[in-house]
Length: 356
Length: 248
Ligand SMILES: Nc1ncnc2c1ncn2[C@@H]1O[C@H](COP(=O)(O)OP(=O)(O)OP(=O)(O)O)[C@@H](O)[C@H]1O
Ligand SMILES: [Mg+2]
Image (tube, each protein chain N blue to C red):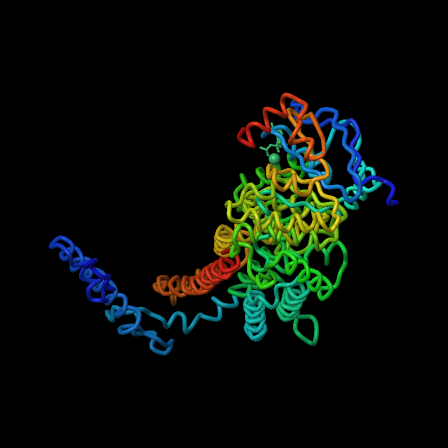
């Protein structure tokens, strides 16, 4: 009689995978003990022996061996809001939430239409700007120089992707133009900008551009940096989109042409939706990198969330607590980047259903 | 556009790929309602010829006139001709990210400016005609090759074209699916559609073609009604080709 298939139980699988030979067993137990030891140590440090409130600050570093979260308790406002005036920080908080909500809403498929998405972001940015900048509805004006912390990071990230993404689409389309002059020129522009470090582009836009541009076109340093960063983002993203387009069989556009569809209809309904689907993993990758590299604006003198973290332990009072501050900032980055990655994975699953 | 003008008139048309002369002095006139089958060895330029008719390929010399409209560099003329000319490809080329129904309604809504309701009604009518209305909400990847090709035919018909071009519509299909596609094409031919079919299905040619055209090395070597074409081919190259594909 043929052996019937027996679905292995959990215990059986564990035994087969980790304890099948003496060597396996030794390795499993050895590494298991190591991991356990590290995790327990971390747990002790982060939770059991930790000092939580600012009031108990004196206990920090006196042999307790635990994390000094008191620094976060004392300085969280600096990390989240940077140099934003203390009395007005509630505005920065609401602006920050508005940005997160706008981002989250634009992940909902219902908003994915050429009408809803721009309206959503227009409203989102308007709320953010009015709250942050003030000067309207009796809000005290706060100049961009004093924006900072997480609100600034989110604002830069959102603006860069929102300006950069349409730019990337245009670049990608020009790059594959049938006219060799246009395609060639676009190729040179993309390659040039990609070969420059992001730092030098930010410097150029922040410091050099004001000497070149007419006065009315200069704008605040913050917006110049954002435009420079968006350009940089667009050049990378354009190549990602172009890769997605190249994966399309020529027959797709031909079929659309044969049906009488014009250029923009073909691009909008046939080419781009499929190109973005093909390019989804590298696009999420690019967004993650972009989010993390917003920290570079510190060299132009902006205190985004990481730089604000540096400032948070930068006083004599707290300078022993840099690990705790970095852990906290890392947690903030992790929250956003992990959410973004999971959303990317969700999109891939969703699109895979349609592509079967 | 009077009904007097032929559906297609190709005069002294030349086509090059780089320095390679693919089509040489092609002359072809297709009357309205005429059904034409084009055959010939691989690489003889059959696909290139019918792709010139809806300007998927540019041509270098001579002229093409479709339904009274001159096919030149004028983009309006090209669009007008494409609207009236449906094409079915060897590899179906359905849009994989859209449902079957959306595949069929997209162009009528965008190009013919039909409302969604109107376009969907027409689409269901044609999907019924190709015998797969129940697949309307599926995606192309969920259908068999034969079903996909029938959808592709329905999609082209939804634009209500005057002329249908077929480029080897059955040669990517498993044998058991060929007849279901050919049946649809025969039905179309019996309704009086002007058709140009590149195909090696000689049974189909005998059954519906008004004229069979044999191409070789970028030239139209011979053309005749099917009985004459198959019984008494004049040209040696035609005889050799028929000998090969009919196996005698
Ligand atoms: N885009 C192209 N660039 C260069 N040469 C091409 C191109 N497309 C086709 N050709 C060449 O032109 C010739 C005619 O091609 P075509 O596809 O029209 O042949 P066909 O008769 O349809 O052949 P088949 O039966 O294999 O489909 C072939 O020699 C082919 O290699
Ligand atoms: Mg061919």
